[in-house]
Length: 384
Image (tube, rainbow, N blue to C red):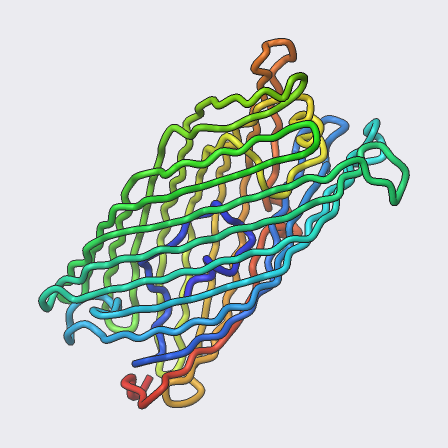
């Protein structure tokens, strides 16, 4: 179980075909819950420093899965035959604020929801190979009430935000003694929408690319690496001041990630750790919008967001009965973002915002959670 469906970040990489901790044997059910947050903060040395916004969901996940291990001695722990279906839902809360030193400070608050799911099918082709098919969705919908320079309890406008990432993949996994390698074609559709009374902007497109995954197992240790990259030219629909004419323009969009991981197994306990990089270039900002971004978007600026983040994952499970595991996991994301703002009319000067995502202590992007899975039938993992 990776925490990909239980995190606040919608556009972060999706480990569609990767296995971290061994699953309960045979047909199994899974339950999990998490508390997560995504925070963005102005990191410049201007009056806007510490202009902050965050999104906080509380997830519940249910799932079913079934798997059959590969032939003895082949591969590095990924089942030869497997299917799983998972659904994660959450209520979320948005908050944004600026220092009182900013004229007409922007304050926002809102409630929304996440509707995430994932499904995967792995079928054996001979003894050494498996075909892998997977699809997942992460989506966040929220409506904020925005106060621009008014007194408390007075709101200037509503802000409608929508963020979605859909992943699909088709791949092949090949197993050797103690080693396995997989390659897949990836199809990803990110979508972001920002809408207020003064501005509308929505971008979405199917992006194409590839992913690689390699694992090596020796004794109770498993190590590996994975990477993925997709890109496309994204059409962006826009309506803005002064005439609100419907315009479509295009910007380059890219999503890429790479990670290293290690798993250690004892008699009844498994521990998994990974560290990776996650980068994106998207022509919208659709989550945890800052007050100054709200102002610039309503003025007519177009954004391009570039993120550079480090993702740390730690998860553990312990067998407490035949085919029954208790699990705990934590994810911390640290990094930065640059939001380039340009005026398509060429009247206003370009602006570059330096945004901190996570970063300094205390950590402001994290996921904490736990859960359990249990076999419906006899355990095949004797002695585990």
